[in-house]
Length: 309
Image (spheres, rainbow, N blue to C red):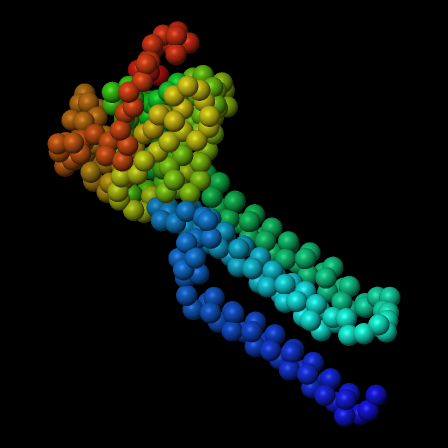
């Protein structure tokens, strides 16, 4: 091989390496200069979370997808480069290489590093999302039953805490869960019959509601006022798809007025009117009751409208 040919090969290789490096730098610059999740619809993850916990999980998802895409682009690039660079050019057998130690170390160490980094950030976010404070501002007991919800506002944590007020859903009325923004809210979940699942899509996660002595407990801080549909996300029987509720997030002052009205004996629609929701706004606006054939047989002999604690 002539020296000029060797020089051309080295120059071509250097240009390819420089091109890969420039592409990597450009990719990083583009990713750091825009909201990648918003540009690509969250890569399949729901957007519009209403809690800091939801935002952390969303950021973890976007970072994981970007890492996967970077690795994928790099691998796909190597595959196509090898296909083009080492395509068959004749009948002569090319030089055979038994191993390439730097390359083998690279493709062994790199996946381990990627997994370790993803595991680290997953553990950090999961620990933060599952964190339980010693003294939450609001405690709500979520009681699920076939096929509706009961929400008990408690004076403190624990199943033996005093019930300050309750809201129970019925066939004709979707239950409203009124909560304040900017405060630590603890949910304590239990079921009277089968496994249900408490899910508000804007919270970006759900928790199973288990029967018996098991109580799922978690906390969130809602930072956006609004009205959001809630659902049962666990197949629980005939009317599972109709087991909805509505989360109403208001400021702290209106929440205290709502709670005081409930403690004074007002119904949930009356308490909603007390804090400024009039007309149809006193009831659920994100979902509506379904016409069902609810009788003793469908409820396995249990009452149809729920019962107090």
